[in-house]
Image (cartoon, rainbow, N blue to C red):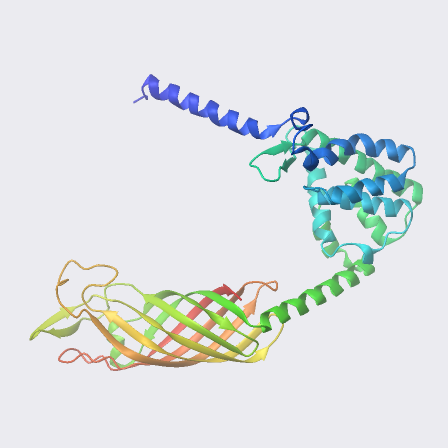
Amino acid sequence: MHPPIQHKLFLLLLAALLVNLVNAQRKDTGRFSSNRYYPAIRFMVKAPVMLPALYKAGKLNEIKNFADNWGQSPMPSDEFIFAIHVLIAAQNNNVSIHQMPWDYMRLLDSYAKELANANNASKTFKYYIKLPGSFYTYDATNDALKLLQFLQAWANNVMEAQKLTDSTSLFVCRVFAGSISTPSSYFKLNKYSYVEMDSYDNSIDSVRQQCFVVKRNNTTATFHILTGVWLPNGNLATLGAHPSVGIQFGGRNKWNEYDVTWSFRFLNPTPHMYTVLRDDTLYNNHYYDGGYAGFDYTRYVIHKTSFEAGFMAGMGYDYFDAFNGFNGSENNHHIQPSNIGSFDFNVGLNLKYFIHRGPSIGIQAKYHCVNYINTGGTDLGGNAVTIDFSFGAN
């Protein structure tokens, strides 16, 4: 069945409106030349005109001043500013890896990606500048394309005229010239050829590791998502194993961590029938949902940059619903109390691995001492083991 003609007209009008809204965000230079947005775009607009003229006149100091001022503008294009500074240094044969910013490889990757897009698909290449304090963006595609072409030609001229032999100078100039399209990957595969860069990266990595360790070891908040399994033993095994999900949050320092933990267990029905006595009536049941809410403490005994381990101890309330829980139960929902619970004391191990000095993944394995009292019904005496995978951050 085809939609009525009114619906088609409505969809066409809606599509036209969306196109107009998108186009309204792509402003041309003239409309910004005299308003508050111009300072954010003026360097990108002027760069492809001024820089080639200054370079032709040999005015490298003026080019440096332009790049410095661009860096202080409301919306600097960091990858272009970085390229200009490095090419000036290469032109003067004084490129030093130790004068580059710590994230120089990120800037090289960003520049190389833009250049590859411009060279390989210039018709689809786009470069937008977010205008401060608004939802608008400026379409700087033509300006960025011309600037990339100029920087690429400059890099080729430097390599030809200066006869560069320094490995760092050659590497960055080849990136700016488009000969290396994926700088970080290329560098990882050829570290032996770039000794100074490798040494610099190692020193940066060492500092970042120290900063991460200091941050982690200071007093800080924690949050983790838990997912795992609850494994009862003894007569409690009647209820069967159940998967669980939960959250954990609290605080820590180098040696101690304090967390509030809540986990919810599910997977209904139980593998074996159990009985519950309520109001002088025995009910046979397979229904189950349960959980744990408590307080956990970890004492760390092993510390590495990316790994730590410690002993855990905790206490709280462990429970399951025999009739009507979070999953719902149409039968016997009127029977109270539906909850069967126990005090829970637990001990175990907490292992964490930190991913790239950021979030952590880990395993928490605990033995729970519980004592479910099911008077008049099935004996549920026994304890349980939980194994949880954690994902979170300090």
